[in-house]
Image (cartoon, rainbow, N blue to C red; front, side):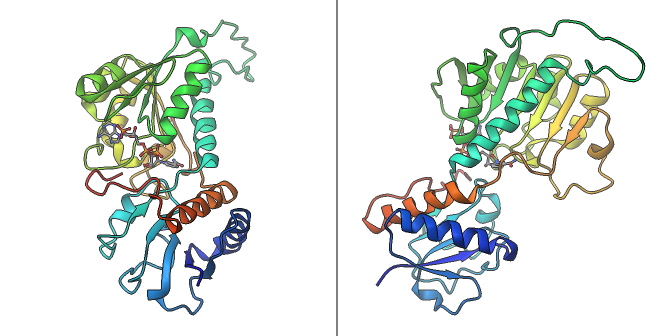
Length: 315
Ligand code: NDP
């Protein structure tokens, strides 16, 4: 009997995921029985749940035969907050080459926009002609907080463009062209040496409010903050205070404590905040479905699953 794979995503996303998964399973030569949420299937017969935490299946208790929970999201704080998450079933987060490309493009675009200060160089209706040479990348110090699947590729790409790159993670890393730092001292060096700071950390108890008044006190005066990790990494009030006193010149924010960002939130109208609607990096069905197929193929022949979440660490 082929294993039963159940898909649980938001209703409007079902057709695209069903098609992508069917294609990926066929391309991998993997025989599975794909079931959608809402289709009649005895929960105890389901081997793999491919899901998003906002989807229809939220109570995992009837799913007693699960071999793995395969999340379609990279961030796992919502998945971990589910009280019915089975203790002994591996939870895998999404590591998708398409998502990684998206994050690289978003963070490189924003880094370059701030680096070149394109907004200040615009020829407007005042007849001005602001013709000053921008610095080259080799004269710009940038920092990347988080050197995981996404951050490492961002740091590598920025270094490839010639930026002076520091990167920070929990455990030490080696990335060509990047000064990789770890631990408390490494954080302080990264903060104090980054004119542009791009953040792509997960939300965990250890990273919440990492970017607070102390951190903004360490960054060079006039630094730019870009946050594509999670809203909780930033102390909002401290960022607004740092923006208002000029210590932080500009912020690009893609993620927020409350999403959608409330209509009356000061980030929406601050002249030096550029807010986007959690769009930095989407899971791309085509490439992500291939990852899901590969995970199931591994598990079915007894190989270890990849990208299993360490629940104690929180990512
Ligand atoms: P990974 O788990 O691959 O990498 C996480 C990185 O953060 C690792 O380098 C890890 O260090 C580091 N880290 C975690 N905790 C700490 C800590 N306490 N101190 C220092 N470093 C720490 O995750 P991804 O790169 O795949 O994704 C990162 C996050 O990006 C996701 O959790 C999600 O929140 C966010 N995201 C945002 C999206 C958007 O559209 N805005 C889209 C996708 C993801 P180490 O390597 O030592 O373990």
